[in-house]
Image (cartoon, rainbow, N blue to C red):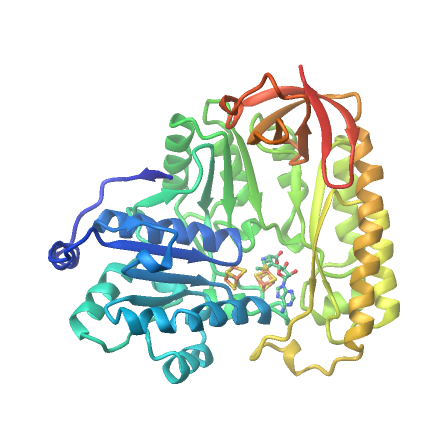
Length: 467
Ligand code: SAM
Ligand code: SF4
Ligand code: F3S
């Protein structure tokens, strides 16, 4: 793990907390478990940063920990039940060690029903810290220590995290950089706007300084994050659009790539594509979540684009660069989705030929508009649609990936598997590559860019050899 410590002013809260931790008869330890999207993992890196700054040693073992934080996701029912299951399994650990602080953080903590459930059924959870109140971590911990057994709750949806919060990064060559928080779109199925609040953009200066410092430290891939990066900057005092931010970041000298997600199709513009295609560092890949191939369903989802507009952006891009890659999110079983709507989704994936698809069975989220819509399909029909979609996409990926065979690509090496002697990495189009015959190659190549000749294509990766 790699720690970044920008200038950080220790507050009286920090001093008092450190003084409490110094009375421990062992080094204090903390475990942070993140769930959900990359933005949430990014928040988790900040929780870790604050905890290490306070003097906690980070651990993966619940048995060793003095503090366990669940940094949660609320996007689907399954994500929530996983967390409540894991929290429930810590009850006996708490009974053996009542000084253990278990905290519920992140998106679930912003939901009143979840907080009510925690109060009622999980009284051993002593801290609730909402996703929008991240910078109050130290203050919350101090309050729990002071409150001696009472629960402490903080939530909030409006703020931007303090720019000086320290970060402990998971990787030494991949780094996530949030550019904005929140979402204004209220897609009818989605809980995110309710648990993350309205859109707030970080200042371009702060983002540029962070990216520059990461590049100087040798990071090779910078992932810019936001729920809809294409509306970046609209709320700034001096408004700036996302393509302009990308231009500024691309001007930073060095050997690195920039990726970003997510792009809402309603705001993805030809200007964005132009900046990407003419850049030195921006990946030739766009994650463009479509959700459904049916215009009627898209309208009921409140997505505010049509399939025709969506396809025209993809076609224009491919005309300029046939290798450019696209991935997407699709929801199967939206309440009003009929068999005919699903056929349109199948037809869309045939037309687009995505390089990668992330598919989700619709999960009703209480409080959202779609949760009140009657479901027209049976669970069996929905699950059958999902199987059909996945098997069709596997065939499409394999055929479409073949366009890279015989080409020479720069690959950022991400992993070395000693057992198989294989290296894994990604091209500038974000295509996964398995580099074979790597016996003579070593782990030292991880985190570097290498040139690879592509020799074959599978449905989930390209195969190649080092040049
Ligand atoms: N902001 C991104 C966008 O609009 O493209 C998406 C962020 S969301 C966290 C990631 C994906 O989760 C969505 O694109 C959608 O496919 C899926 N999702 C959101 N709500 C869902 C729900 N209630 N049931 C199933 N999937 C859902
Ligand atoms: Fe959810 Fe839609 Fe916002 Fe994405 S754009 S986070 S799907 S409401
Ligand atoms: Fe989940 Fe929150 Fe992300 S609901 S998908 S962790 S913004």
